[in-house]
Length: 111
Image 1: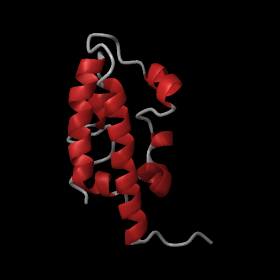
Image 2: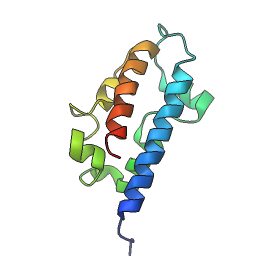
Image 3: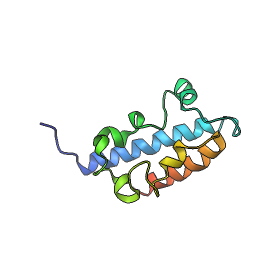
Image 4: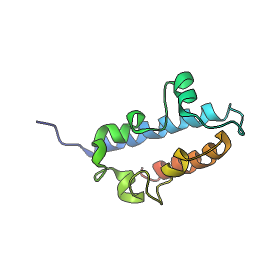
């Protein structure tokens, strides 16, 4: 039987998600802002990307999202006003960076 998810588990996952986005943002800040935003390039060089397999919240709550604090406050990733969809659809690293900074603000608002 799975152990229940505690408030401490959720706080830890939010903090780890924030750290994950900060690492990705720092990496993107070193890229040419006009270059296309390919997650494979990020994954190859950083070993992280902005998809669910690298998200501590997704890893904690699974694909259902109904209990995820980000989904509860901003809707599921992919549904506005959750900014993740804009990150995912960014054409350039410059656009990605702008949207990722908003994603970081959404995550920080959960603490």
